[in-house]
Length: 113
Length: 109
Image (cartoon, rainbow over all chains, first blue to last red; front, side, top):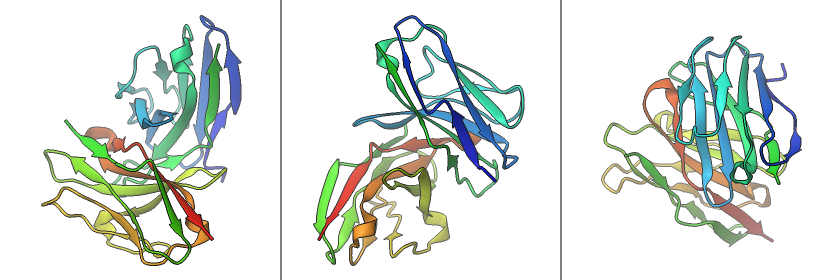
């Protein structure tokens, strides 16, 4: 099992460009999450999903959109990238049961110039 | 509002010395707390959770509701313990986690 995978690993965007980050998991997990990690700020939740076809806002949702059309995939979109969105993005998944453990992907390093 | 505070950005200890990584939380409900670890070039992974009351890699953490703390401890630090450690609080529906800002542990020889 690959666990949680993220595509791409690195990306450089110019201000105003758009892109989509793909997260895939092969563990049949119900819940999926997108975080951003910034120096001195820890991980902050952007959006999450508790099942196929559902999404919800996290702590820092502005400037991002998400979709969960298939249970195994969770997409994070940036419609018009800004330098403030330069960050490392992590996807995670969990069963949704009482174990609560989240399994993380390797991260995507995004730079917006 | 829920909050997790890790006051130390960097903690440097010598090999064999005791380690204590501090974590304080603010939460109105019954807290469920975790420690996650990120080793160099590896993914973030769960280290331990307070409900299981287990010791992982020699680390333990006790929930102190009176002091609203969940400090991570290890009696003798090893070089392989060098990593970034995050304290996290389970917050509401969707099994969401609120993370602290993290503490970089450096174990020196």
